[in-house]
Amino acid sequence: MTSLIKLELARALRNRKFLFFSVLYPSILFLIFSSSSGSDDRVDGTGLTVATYLMVSMASFGALTAVLMGNSERIAKERESGWVRQLRLTSLPGRGYVLAKTAGAAVVSLPSIVVVFAVAGAIKHVRLDAWQWLALTGVIWAGSLVFAALGVAIGYLASGDAVRPITMIIYFGLSILGGLWMPSTTFPQWLQDIAEWLPTHAYAALGRAIEQSQAPGAQDIAVLAVYFVLFAGGAAWLYRKDTLKA
Amino acid sequence: MTTTAETAAAKATSVVAFDQVTKSYGNVRAVDGLSLALHPGETVALLGPNGAGKSTTLDLLLGLKHADSGTVSVFGTGPREAIVAGRVGAMLQSGGLMEEVTVAELVRLACDLHPKRFKVQDVMARAGVSQIADRKVNKLSGGQAQRVRFALATAGDSDLIVLDEPTTGMDVSARQAFWATMREQADQGRTVLFATHYLEEADAIADRVLVLHRGRLLADGTAAEIKAKAGARSVRFDLEGVIDETALRGLPFLTSLDVSGQTVRIQSADADATVHALYGLGVYPRNLEVAGLGLEQAFVAITEAEEAKQS
Image (cartoon, rainbow over all chains, first blue to last red):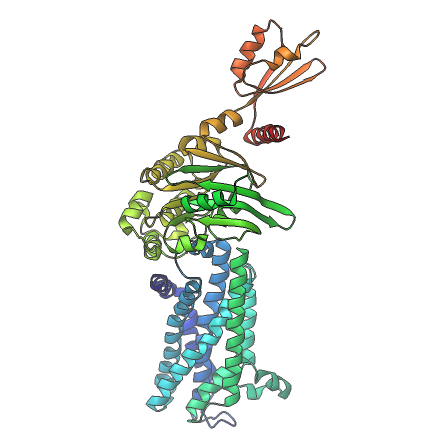
């Protein structure tokens, strides 16, 4: 199984277009979004500067991009091409394929998080304690597993033609409604009530709690945990269905 | 019919054993009560027209599909167990390949995943892909991709090699080169099972040919036997006056006779000999036509002959 993981990692790191979108694009968005506000402007009700607030949003967004975009499309295409069937004729355990895909995504999501932090620290002078940087990296990286599971589920749900539009809708829907692009406090109240229950909202809220040196909200942890169970369970169920059908 | 004890014995010693296997898609029976056994060291062709159930049979054998009823065993176990033990190497018809990696990387992966792996260099050399080792998999021609698939199927010391229409998309010379490679596998004592719809291919390489039609086993014999059956020709001619059917029925190699009015239709396993003997009867056939039966028609001819035998 390690050989497939190694090959998936090599392939992920070789794909320049994908690396650009998941590693550099979030940092560029971060600079654009934070350019209009001064270094002392604060986001209402958080006590955080705009740059600090946006840093977590964009690091989360970058990790989301890395784990959601690549895998869903690749799994759907590789199912259609028959590569998944070919792998089933080897001694590779069934879960090996999904694990390798997830590892491939995780190796791209880590740099996308770190690059946003580096840009925020160097250019926007975001300052946090050492433990906060480490905890942020760990929480955002680990939290991206929720969306990796979603990516796998979409890959097994959608056909090769439909997978890109479906992924795009979910990706932008979760990013924007979850408040990754602009604080959800700017939304009308009814939309805020919905956004609060989205996994992306809970995901970014965990990071922000670390920035505020607070304990993470119980609701946010619960929301993420429930989504993880839903997505991972869905992915496992769809995977099994696909195996029986193929 | 075999008894249960015989079936159990067959399962223990055979490479592959199908026992009354049925698989349907909706109303279509792709495989219909199929029983067969493959023995160690045989090279077996699974021959049949498109839609005969060849691919479904191989999918069942490889555990990619599950039978609605009946049992499939490979080396006395289930297909998946045999694959995990490294006893089976397989190449699917147009089986997809991982993209954006090189041929060498993909072959190395297949070797790593095989419990009884061969050296990557050797596998590539045998499959004839050493020259394209550094090429990206998604930049290969159809014939090259087939050779890479073959390399994946032969990445380790498997006892059974299964190939589904392996020469699809190859030209004549590539096809011949491929069969030479295939024969090496058989010469090393492996059991080889391949599906094809070319009779010539089955004839050139297989010790044994299984003819599949509408999901059922029509014939099981040496290539020469099948060829004699499938190589049948139809002979048609008109005769004047009273037709002596008894004399016609006595013609050599005749497999069927149909007389309607003054027209006689014959199917013969050796049309040359039959026509020669026809003149020997002292009759004067007019409008003589001799035509080959296509494989499809030959299968129908075999089916009718089989059904006639049973009734």
